[in-house]
Length: 125
Image (cartoon, rainbow, N blue to C red; front, side, top):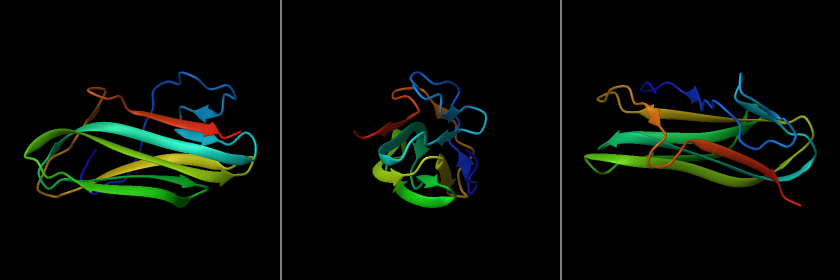
């Protein structure tokens, strides 16, 4: 993740997708039916003091929910997470984005430990 650049949160595989609605090429989820959905995502990153990290998700190119956190320790394995409940209609598209803001520090890489990078999108009955 390069400072100041907003990136789509990239996923490499799906583990459970009964509607086959997640597109691994575009990293988007196409809502299969209208209703309320619980939407959540997280990533792990090796952070440094004063690094600021941002995670958000959009529905149809509009920011629905976002979170920003600054790292206060000198070096830490940090988890950024977001969760919300949102009403969606059939055909809406959900995408997760991340960014790092701090020109003094170098490129950061997402990694799978201690906590994995994932997203979950589930219709609430």
